[in-house]
Length: 453
Image (cartoon, rainbow, N blue to C red; front, side):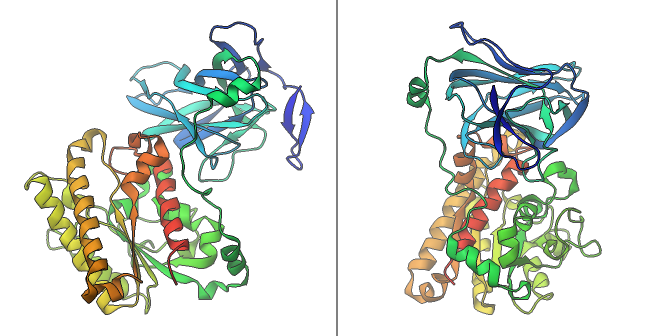
């Protein structure tokens, strides 16, 4: 007997495993397969895309060794990570991150094991694993129809998959004697703050009474990390899509800008974003000052261009300077300082010639093939933080900077959310994966909800 959710009300009732899902005996002290679902009878396939996951509920406590999924590779060399979450669904707090699984060209379909170290699971508690591709992946996982009563498949950032759908998976580990040992062994989860969609009661009350026409306007400003065109697969639209599809955010704020609609943008916005949230001011490849005589490649000029489409911008979300840092023409400290100076100059112009509030980000990390530029990112983030601190402290500027400027440390956020494995949230070492977009979305919203009005 296990816990099962019925299809009508999702209420928890007692039931048994259906068809080909089975709990295996928990007797031996060595690692063994404790839970197995499929792949026999699993006739469907679901693309990993940016991320896909499955919730499950162990009957008894166990010391987890690995979680395996039945994967059909996409034919190229790819890497995959697995997040283990404490709870049901992809919005649950993180508990652990697996070792990366590398799948080479020509690998046949079969079990791929994601190893964990020092993670204990309690019997009767729900957990979720999420498989994340390190690049845009067409690899698929075996999909089973109503195969397992103790969980379900999930697609983070989108609507859940069919409630009667499960992935083919196996849980391998060592049984534990009693739940008390589990409680003692559980590592503390990472601290991402409140759940991504949680709001203070007073904010939730304001949403109910605010008319859509009175929503605050928000300009996302930057480069491809803001734009996130369709070549990024499941992460298309990036943090903007995750924010726009959050009901709480959409009830309070509306994105604006010159780009995001087909005739104005160098890339269209995702079809599954609300139409009135598709506008932005991000241009792929843009630097602070631009290049080649094309004004759209300048983040500074893009800001002023985007100002022409609205009489008022309440908030500017600025993640800018990444492309300026992707070279070695200057020493890292000089390049970082120069780019930070241009960023602060733009911020000064915004504050002088508008009433907008600015939330400026310290840039996300760069890994993999872009890791050689990460030292430039670190220098930029340090210089930017120092320059903003000086503006906030100087009596000549503090009076208008303090109430209107807030800094978000996106760099550290990628370490905090991933257990110090930021590459897991970057699909190519530079641009956020679906998981990375959700991290950025959370940090932006947390800053906006706590920004002084």
